[in-house]
Image 1 (tube, rainbow, N blue to C red):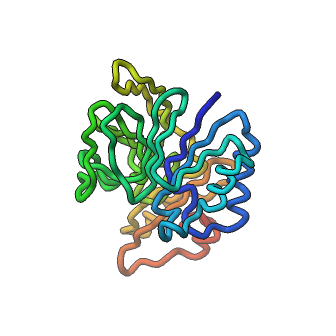
Image 2 (cartoon, rainbow, N blue to C red):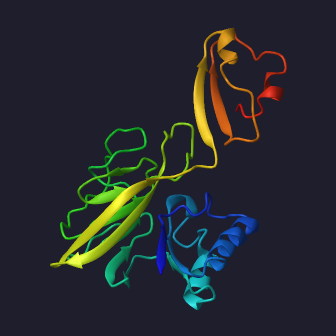
Image 3 (cartoon, one colour):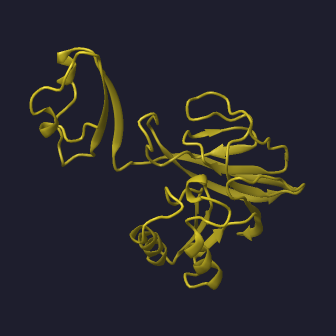
Length: 239
């Protein structure tokens, strides 16, 4: 049985549209041979009780969709015989045992999306265990944690390539053994930026073509320059 772990931020708001919830549940229902594990990210939450996974949590507990496992509170359980600690956003602690942790936060020793060190964050100290984390868009690894990053760009500051994380975990000699690799994703779109300093720079942004992966451009335009006539008609992918 395959397991898929969605590292938080299933939705981008605590009050997602009904169509978005239905699309998510349809994905789970159409893939009954895959076990899905989800937990709260910061974008899913307005408060501890008001969040986007209320329906998902109910369906998970009632076993209406038996391959859905939703965690809105810190929970220790076993997946494939491995003790796993699911830690929703805003909470962090470590028991003094071997486990594989799943959370949604930054940790000391990691980097923010801008490449600078994470500060004012918890520190993972349990040497018997390791964490797989969401929240940070930048794929990275430290001694105690791995962040797969987002599988596609969330904003124009996110760099390519983007990744998924493939992993296998075992308890060996009272410690967690985690083998993993970053697998490059094939994003459905690309976000790029360009600074426009001269009239000629406008022509360096290609005309939009529907048959290839769409590339959306964010332009920073120097003072005194304006868009050429019909520019946005030929390039609707410029934001």
